[in-house]
Image 1: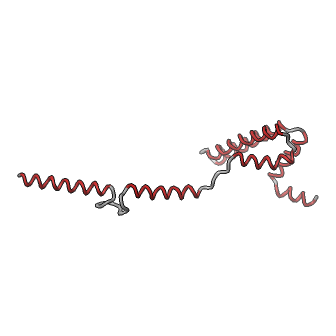
Image 2 (image 1 turned 180 degrees about the vertical axis):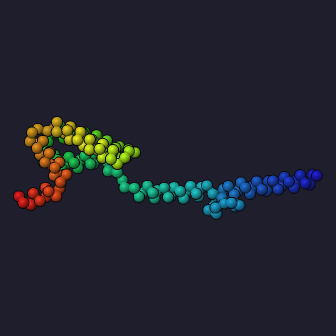
Image 3 (image 1 turned 90 degrees about the vertical axis):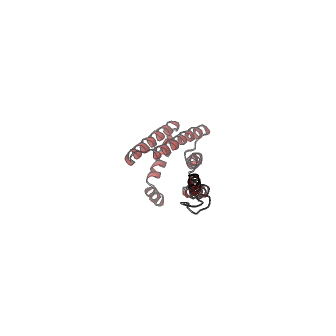
Amino acid sequence: MKPFQSLLIIAFVLLSTNIISAQYGNGGYGNGYGNGYGSNRRMNSGMDQSRTQDKPKEIPVEVTVGKIMERIQPELILDELQVIAISNILTESIKTQAMLIKAEVSQDDKIKNIKALSETTDRKIMELLNKDQKEKYIAMNEEAKNPKKSKSKKKSN
């Protein structure tokens, strides 16, 4: 009976070591990539990096606001206080717009929300402008909405 027990113990130890090594990719059911978990993780992290590099980098809000201000400041002849106030309004608006775009709602709701945000932003900016600046701002908005018409008007002038 003793040799039979020893044989069972040896068989149990051999089978359990084979199963343990197979979990780490060294044999049995291993994937043949070396030491199992470690190499698999390295492969996945390499794939994750290539996925993140494919996404376009987001342009910072401050850069966008700066470009808008460079365009409108000379045309509207804004003073420094107006520049700061309008920059703050545009920064808040762009951040809110980004959140609206990322929101998980229907496309129609996104469009409605963005239009409402645009109207609110325009109203806030208009409050800061004098009469001449308001007229120029309205003309600039119309030109931005209908660029083809404004180009043909410039050619005829």
